[in-house]
Structures are given as structure tokens and as C-alpha cells.
Image (cartoon, rainbow, N blue to C red; front, side, top):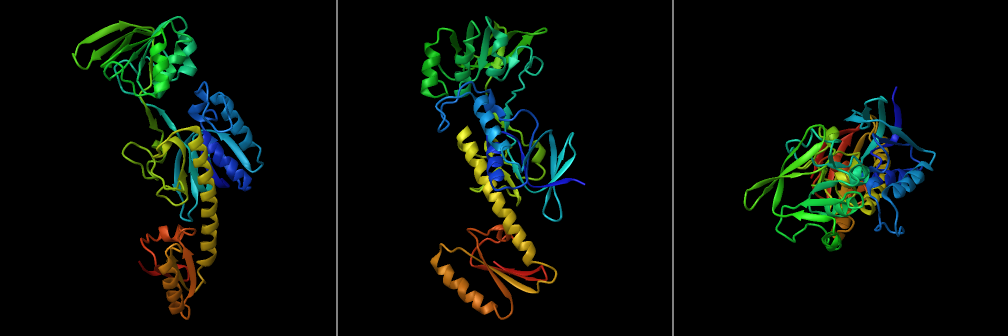
Length: 389
């Protein structure tokens, strides 16, 4: 017999913890499942200065505050395990399958599965991970104290982390695809890097190969203009060339875009009713702690309304409910108010009529695949008879 929850949050990053805070305030029985440490990738950030109300803090410090807040609600539970898949049951509930803790049931799911560093598949990259190839400066910088290393990438993360790495390494050489002076990062980070005497750049270049025996010993770099390759001795390589979403576990149930990110609407709803997605794994313009926290708040609130609406529909559409008509309309379209009133008058002698304001009650409208308002759907003893769309 699996334990049942109102909501299960998969992932304990800033979005997931924010969702847990909002769910806890609503006294919903909530389970947060995290396979690693709470806080997500932001906990590896040395310094955060752009979270409102926090002048400066480490990523780990800020996430500890998130976790402490989420844990303060007695209705919230936390488990460390890996989610392997999610299935939707015939009654509309969900089962979350895990590797070590068994199965858990819930009425809705919030996905905060995050991202992971992009692996390019360069010869030697996989072989030397943990032996000179790294993806997190905060995690691994101390292992390169007094050494000479390379950094691949020219975006904000690559350049900011390069500056941080100079606190440990004697020299940091950044491999940049663009022409001299052209970086993809913000201007402040670029100026700091250009002024740093420990940072050098290899322009118009890409990484071809990583070589070594037990540990990284050299890198082969190709100039994209001259097509020439050069081998440089080095003690290690940090790669910062973007992130990929960790959405493999839900690709069979939730729609993904070609890059693996999850499309959501303004309520953080996926294409599956009852499943929400938040944070870096979604198609979002900005991936920051503040936007992730907002995502969690939106998803938790929207999922609470979803459960309330679903329960209302379950109570209305029973096997003894008789003839029922739902009429869907948008109250912000003035003409539709008069139209739906007229339709209700026409139907009320034959059906028990329920008005559905689609700006607040959209579940049935979406489940039926309705496309426009004013429209209607007719049921007899809980079963759909016809719909006029």
C-alpha cells in the first residue's frame, strides 16, 4: 500500500523548496523527493548578490534558509532517493516510482528536475572526469591550487568561474570560439577577466582533445580560422558550455521541446493535467534563484486550485448525477456574459447547468479539448454525451 500525498515535488532546488513553502502554508500533505543535496546547482555558487532582501550570501547559505523554511511546516516530508518514473492512474492520480524507497501516490506532481552540465563528447572528456576534467569551480577549484588550467566557454558562468579559479590556480587560460576581445558574458565579468593578470585567452578556438595517462596532461586546441591545431600542457580543464535539462525520467509522460526542456503556461502547467514544471528544466527566459522561487509559488498555488476543481467535478459527475450541462465562457468578454446567460436559460429545463468561468475553472475545458468560448458539454450519469465547441 503506497503512501498518498496531496502533492509530490520532485527536486529540492529553489523552485521545489519554494513550492514546498507554499504547499506547507496551505497545510497540504506534501512530499519533497531529492536525489542529492537540497538547493540544486545554486548551492555551488560562491556568492549571490541579486536575490531581493539578501545583499550577499553564498548559494549554500541561501538554500539552507529555503530548506529550513520549507521544513518548518509539519505537513511537509522530505526523502532522499532517485525518482525513476511517473505513471498516471485511471482515477487521475499519479504514482511516483523511486529506486530505493518504493512508490508514492499523489493527486498532483511538481517537477523541479533541474539541469546538468553539457557534455560535448570530446575525446578524453569522459575518461578524465574527476581526474582533471571538472564542471564546478566551487566544488573542485582547491584541487588545482598552484597549477595551470584551461577553461572552455565564454559565457557568464565560464568567465565568472575563471576569475574565481585564479584564487587557486597560478594561471587560467580561457578557450574562446570568437575573435579577440569578444566574450559572451556580461560587461562587468569581462572587464574583471581582462584586468586579471592570471587569465589568458586563446581566441578563435575550439577544444579538440584532452590527453593524459592517469590525469589530464595536455589539451589539443584547434584554431577555427587557420585550421591549425596546437597541443598545450595543462593540469586540468573546466568546461562551462551550457546546461541540459534532466528530463529523461518524465519524457514518456510529459511533452518536451526538441532540446528536452518542458513547455509550461503561465500557471506552470505541462500538457498533462495535474503535472507542473518549475525552474531551470522549463522553457524560461531567465534561470535565476528569484525566477525559480516565483515558479514554485505559482505552481503550488495552481496545483492547489487544480485539486479543488478536480474534487468538485468528481462530486458533480457521479453515476447518478443525471443530465448535466457545462457551459464555458470568458467573463472578460462582455458579449459572452449575455450569450452564456441566454444559453443557460435554454438548457435549464432539461439539464442541471453549471457555468464554467475558464479564467478560473479551466480543468474540464482542457480535459475535453475545448477550443473556444462560449461552448458547452453534456453529461448523463457522469458520462460525456456530446460537446458543442
